[in-house]
Length: 329
Image 1 (cartoon, rainbow, N blue to C red):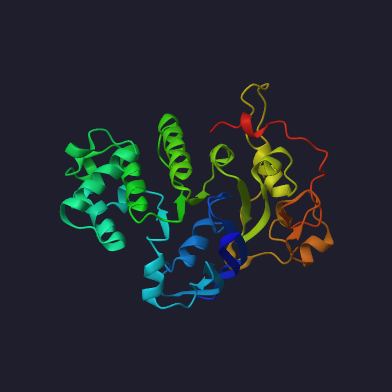
Image 2: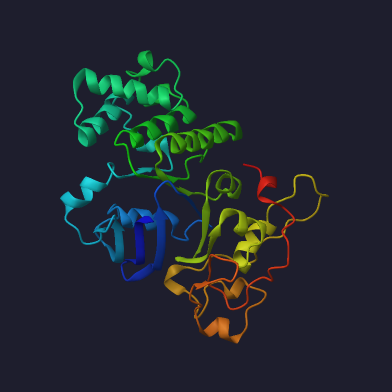
């Protein structure tokens, strides 16, 4: 049963709508991947859900956790959920950590706020969390500043801070950005391990299809502020139906294949201030017809499961050249 329910979520900045009705359900312990090009609305969806957008943003729709509505709720209600029941790891740990405070103090602040721990009890728990996320010699490094840690270790500190409130849902927004491949794999393994041990749900926001295939049960593909396809990870990765999703996979080079030119998705993501009429992907789609340029397809349940918003889906019989296991994580 879903404990996070997002229905018809919309966001507008200065009259320009950037989210056009996002619907998501997340069950307890489930891992959902959100993928798509930069600017499609992946991060904005969760910033809106947690009340973290600036005041000029106009947010509509519904976001509920165990039936409790967050959109339009009081600041006290939202703060009771944010960090405690839903925690978020932001993209850049170097800018998310305060450079003038020791990392231990920053973790202990979360422990005090969300669990009421203080003094030596908070310090002991902060050391335990640093050990949990794989920071060596945590007891001697708890009083160091962020600049004394590597980029991967700063990301681990951010994960420790997010876990301080023992959340039901962890939102990881590009948690492996700017990390080398080995450290990326370690962070993903860490998130999977913590999820298995704690039973928390997770949303992984990423451009990395390999990362999503490695750690997520379901995946949702976003384009221009809408979810265009969603399914179990295995089904979505083995036979994507939306032309945009298929284009993302076709653009991945085959590790063991012959050398050849990559297959790009021609064109660019449309400006939210000048979206085309009809399907936002139509100007870049080789299958678009008159209907695609005049009407926007609504997500429909597919006969193979999942949701799909397309008038001309890719034939189910067309296999992918690259399996989920073949995509580098």
